[in-house]
Length: 165
Image (cartoon, rainbow, N blue to C red; front, side, top):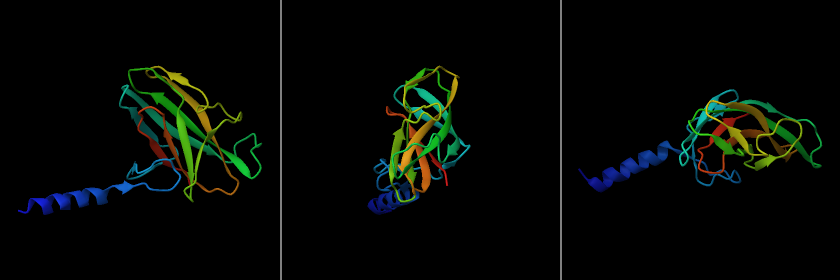
């Protein structure tokens, strides 16, 4: 058996079985894309490997356009309503983050909108077993076609991705 060829073949098989996300502008760099993105209503477990925290996050609804509608000229608000539950033993204290990515690959960071209870604009606290529902709002181009939402927290969390259209 030729060991270098065997190792090369295994490496090739491994690399071709993972989808690499190289979509411009989504902030992920060369992150490995999950085999299948979740859909609205699906619960996804995410973890913080450094602090032993486990969250179950569900994208429950996408509101497009999100009220109140006073975005910058040429823009509109889209809100993503999430349900977060702390399934870990430790308290979660952080401001969750999310990005909306449209069909062209343009990424939009969250913004503040008084139209729904915001999750992304402030630090939230969830003790073990506690649940909270709220929104993260994005200001997007008026003609943007939303495709997916990526959810995570800034310090060590894995991320979740939902297809939204």
